Image 1 (spheres, rainbow, N blue to C red):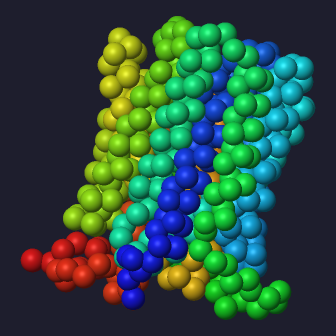
Image 2: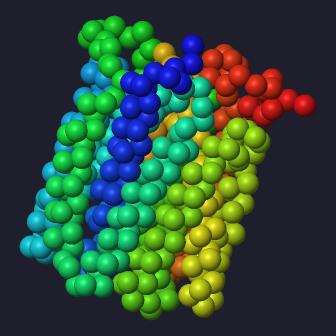
Image 3: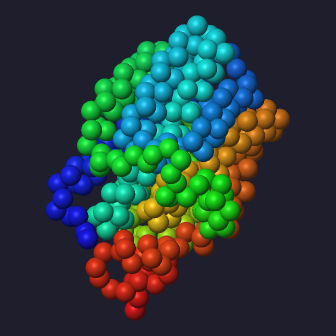
Amino acid sequence: MIDRRDSHVQAAKIAVAVTFATNGIAFAGWLARAPAVRNDLGLSPAGLGLLLLCLSGAAVLAIPLAGPLVQRFGAARTVLTSSMSVVLGLLILGTGTALGSVPIAGAGLVLLGAGNSLWDVAMNVEGATVERRLARTLMPRFHAAFSLGTVGGAGLSALAAYLGISVTTQVCATALLAATVMLFTVRWFLPAEPTPAGNHPGGRVRDAWREPRTLLIGVIMLGFGFTEGAANDWLAISLVDGYHATETVGAIGFGFFVTAMTLGRLFGGTAIERWGRVTALRVTAISALLGLLLAISGLPIPVVLVGALLWGAGASLGFPIGMSAAADDPLRAAIRVSVAGSIGYGAFLAGPPLIGLLAEHFGILRALLLVVVAIGLGLIGSGAARPLPAAVTRTTPAGPPHDSDGNAAG
């Protein structure tokens, strides 16, 4: 049954979008100022990469817990608790930056990374539930809300950098905003049905690790996650270090990337419904490759900014398609999303230190060539994103018959 007129589901749709946007603001509220964090802490590129490892390492270690937590406590309670971990992490990061203390900043990033990965899985599970209930392709739009949040965060970061506002002041303000919004937003999530301890109606995590399709979906998320994460972590720095641009230009370049990613996600749902998940993945991979090559070409800044746009459009659909594919079966959605997400978050674990170490020896622009390998991984796994036959029957709106990739027949 399609719940288009169910006001509770419609309210949950808005709440999920706000949750994604808030996560994006919290995420970009400090990443666009990464050059200033590096300078305040006196770090080399390799040192910054190792510091970012605190973030990505905690995220990867925490994400396997997300599926069981969502099954046990529901998406709303998991999102609320994990978002408060992000808030605390931002406050500690700001404190560490103000004191010039790498250990304190690293501790903040650990809380931020762990909280963000739990927040990510829980809000995607909730988003997939709303998507199924409304029988529409909504996940790219939810991720577009995240990107809109990052656009806002990047814009505020550029303004703060221009006005000379410290990183500490900015991240603390971002933390307070996130806490205020999330305390109210999760009240509008769909009602949870907690699972008693020891009961596993959605399967066990170790079972999902044996499913080839789930693992390949994880490979898709790994490849596109690395493609997205490399820009998140290093695009602003590549403009500052590789092109000798100002910090403001670096933040603007990051803003170009997330703006293109937002537009790709806003309109990507229509493309997916028309051409299917697999075709959408392959087209965006080509865009990401072209954008990356322009971004590291050494050509004038306007050309590099065009590259940032193409890179952002190319990175836009990999993660939301992966999340939707992993959640095709509602009973196993939480577990499969957490397993595929664990693989995907490997990009955020390996990416920062690898690119940082390569940048130390070869320069940041050449180091970013590593992203080409990630794009290849996304292409290799793309076929696994085809909807499960039963999931197509349940979630495709009434209309023309659909093939195995969700394409309209005839």
